[in-house]
Length: 264
Ligand code: 6PG
Image (cartoon, rainbow, N blue to C red; front, side, top):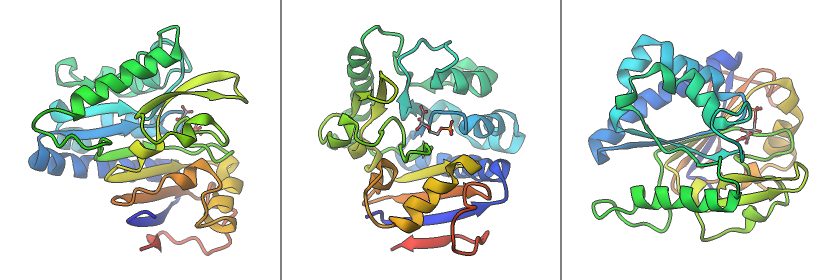
């Protein structure tokens, strides 16, 4: 069970994205002061676009972030080149990275252009191990990222952990090439032990197309682990749901803008 799981409601996707951007800007300096680096995993799909745009264009946010000490990772990636329309890296690059001074960027890209997704996963895991398992950093079994952004699909998947997919059973590897039967393709993804080692997980969920699954996971099957998104529960970290009004529209509880704690 997460150290603390909260649900936060926002009027729209812009307000939700601004909160996410402000949290990143707030956590960054503290992480660098304490550990010399700030480690962030970016999510995929389309929701993060606004978040990236804010980080790249809001002067207060941009100046608050310790870019040269901020290491960006990806929670998952599609098995495509970095300039492919489906690439999660491409979305981040077009909306954030290419607007920054390249000398300040510390991006750990998934080598998803490799023809074999399993090789891409192995290479990406080696990159993470090289970064996280250095002599001056506790060689923990799993890397504790400061902040992991995640999205949720309307089927309850998160990162590229889809319902019934093999990676959900993984207990040792950090990164896997996960076969997604319904998509008939592999996706490269962080595994649950890595997501659950995080200090803070922010789930950004927006849009009416997510409303049914939001109600399913937060009310009808609340507290269970029926869907991958429910299996993300960092025992020594925070799990924060950030919902816009549309995504929260099928919840029976009154929607409040205040933060509501689900679990202690
Ligand atoms: C991906 C993601 C995936 C995504 C959700 C939501 O690579 O697609 O990592 O988990 O976050 O499917 O996607 P949208 O933001 O496009 O709704």
